[in-house]
Length: 325
Image (cartoon, rainbow, N blue to C red):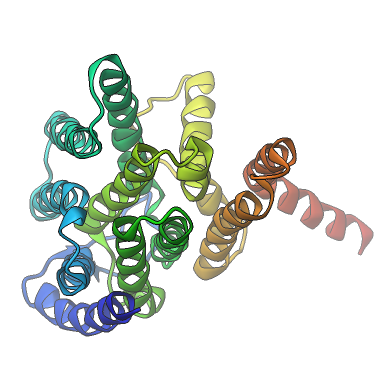
């Protein structure tokens, strides 16, 4: 598919150019106590990813993608402003709510939803968009994790678009997957980070694709399948910190991927485990949902539980190894 390959190539080239510009502008992510990197690294590589997405959509000629793409671009711009000069949490949240509302209303209008159904649709989608954009931002903490998860999510939505005869969903999924894969080699080698511009933009695109799929009567669990690992990890950390009485807004290293890296896993190992879990959920839904719905949902719970329990399981195995040797 041309939009996929074009977005991939543009992302590779544009990210390489962005690294040079970001270094010259000294837009660097300096390590702190929460960081998983040790040297100052350019941030803002998500600019190249968003350019690649726009090029892919433009070449596809699919104008119906803009109700999702435009709010995502605006939210990416907010993220870039935060990369340049830290914005307050209130400003970021207000922007997320405003643009999430715009996206939800736009999609609802395009599919002709009205009355109480429209109000429920917009309310649920608004909460989902804001929640997922923040989860995507929180989870973007090791090399490769967000590029891999965005590629999985993009591929899933492209497949849903094919299955449900939605060219718009197909195009959006394809260009997100291509742009994410084009960024991956640069990020995996620690040359550049997405920055908030990328995490806000990609998070909004994936959440918007889920909203679009739901508006076209795709079952809700299929719409969110590749998003569940990020949401579960973030929610679990919030619950753990709340129960322990720790501030929810304080920087930390308690996500599953962070604990795995602290336990000796490589960045790519932890990223691949996270993205692989997302992919496993998507495959389970694709194979089982239509004819074995209960089994599919049970498998979702099993995969999410296994993912969340991974750090403890790894520690347990290491402890066993120490005892037996």
